[in-house]
Length: 132
Image (cartoon, rainbow, N blue to C red; front, side, top):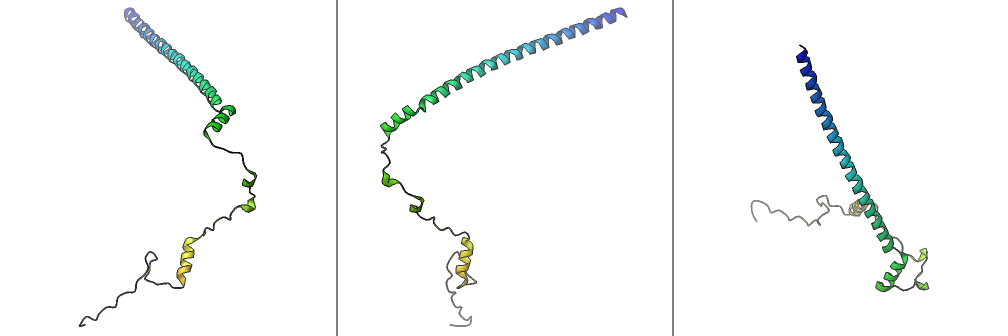
């Protein structure tokens, strides 16, 4: 009986050692993954900082002014180019209810057979069936 109990205890110790080794291995692997991710994050932060510096250099007002003078044919604003709000044209009229306006326009000369998409033509007269 004692021998059986010793065998069970030794087997349990071996299983526990395997489980602890496996957990330790997974923890080490996760720690390596975390270290790799931190390194990648630092690289991305450096790349972002470099891009921000490049963007700031490209958007500097002196550089933009030089490029505008070189590539654009801009002139200073003449005094006669200034207008007031009164000089602007009126806003064009947009019918708020175009369908209602069409119905009102058709009301006076409405043809019950017309659909509105094609002008109605007079219907041909039918001949009597028996002769000419």
